[in-house]
Image 1 (cartoon, helix red, strand yellow):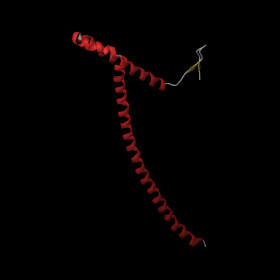
Image 2: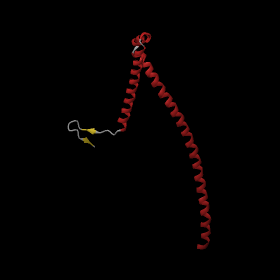
Image 3: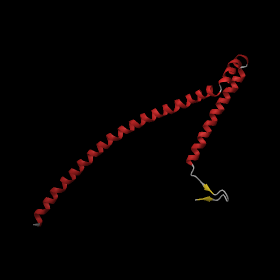
Image 4: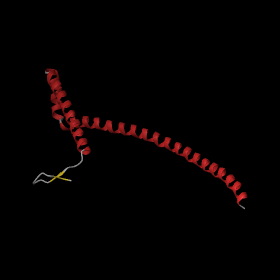
Length: 128
């Protein structure tokens, strides 16, 4: 009885290996197709986000200036004819204001990156 069982085991082994090999190929192909689609969607989504984020910020700065200073704009038009040097100073002020906003954003990002340090207000010893 021991001799006829050996060839049956030999015949069964290659069939099992073939079945496993076929099953492995199919999920790899499916995963490859599924991975390509979300990557394309993410790239398009990122491009849309960048366009949406950049444009409203610029528009918002342009809209804020006329709302905050309706009277100085009228003075600017008169000063352009008489003294063009003051117009240059006003442009510098706008640039400085934009730089301050950028610095505030950078500081805010740095604060988010740094881990919070809880300190006692009385003895100023960092509590872990």
